[in-house]
Image (cartoon, rainbow, N blue to C red; front, side):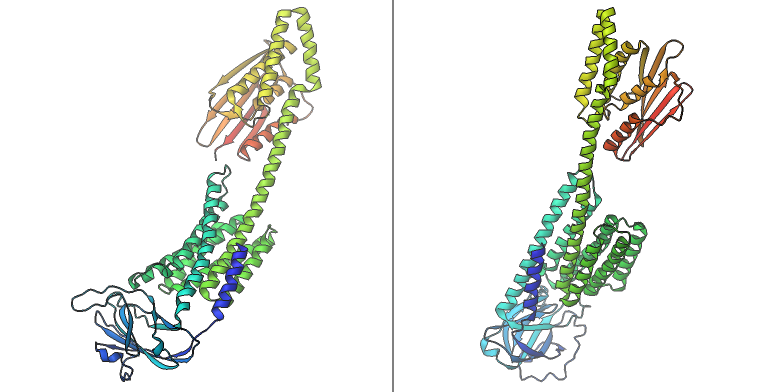
Length: 555
């Protein structure tokens, strides 16, 4: 896109410096009425008005002298910009028409605002010539739009707009592809980045703005709809002027987004009402307000040492320089393009941050997998378990076999869930029950498991409850009846999902407050991996034993 922008700028600079025909234009004169003699060069129009006035549906004439001072070889053409339907006379010779004039009970067929006519070679030599229009303006009669004439080589009059339009269409196509790509990226992303969605909308609006601006070159638009296109262009510019600062406020973590955007909207609406129907001026002011607001955000970002702030500042300054030295239409779109490129640069920075976060999450996930495996293959656990297993096999082979089956079952479940980020809650409960079966043989203590309100469709990070269960076994003393009971409860409401794990036993005495060691760190890491910061974890002693509450908040 940068190469396309550079090539387009060079072409515009060369094309804007080339002037084939040198001419002098005189003010037009108007007169209401109809007489074919008024097209003649010899007619004296000194008594005619310099203003058209309200002609209603009547025929009126316009006479405008032009003096060719220098022209190169080639056929001369005229570009005429005027409202109405009219016939065009050059030195008294009819050279074309635009629409169909009203008269004799026939309704006017509106012409287009801009038309092109070819001059006869015999009537385009150096010297003074006369352009005369026989016209009506039956619609939009309050609009007193003057007549503008531009002579040039006829082929250039037709070719230059097509060349400019072709490059603008290339630019528009690039923005359309970008809009579609980022819309798909947003829709198919599991992590919804609103900046991606906003950037896609900006690209789509910019594509639409380019198409609407140059629609006049390949679609015939009657003068009655001339202001409709300008109104659409104005509102598109308004939307872009709102969304570009919004994008920067999000990317640069601007603290008072709502206040800034409120004032921005208020100022843009004030510009619209104060300069109503001054379309070019309104668009210029929209762009200026957007630029100033973006500068405030970027300077604040540089003060906060945000990444990319300096690059965007350079881009904004470059866009101001381009807009100042090029023709408004070209400068506006090129400066807008520079700003969009700055936004794209910020998006690449954000994408790199997300990629680094993803890489870190993968490393965390791998580390948690190893931690989960280590939980059941640590030497202390294996030595004590195998020692107990030998004793049970020697004393009671039948119960020893049950011990072996329970231990194998726990290892099977651990192996199945080791690489998962989330597992079914029922699978987690089965893991807890098999672990209780193993520990019951090892410690010869009776363990009981209870559950309430469990939703079988729910998922949970692996070994989350299992870790709490281990802590309850390690730090608890059986009650008077020789039993330790565990209860898992589940509640769900509109705000969150809540798991409550209770241990009913006597707590072992500790020398300091029990804040949890590796087990609690494992739980917090697993919750962060799966839910980001949308969770709370609370674990505390109670009169009955120990209570742990995990809340997972909805998005």
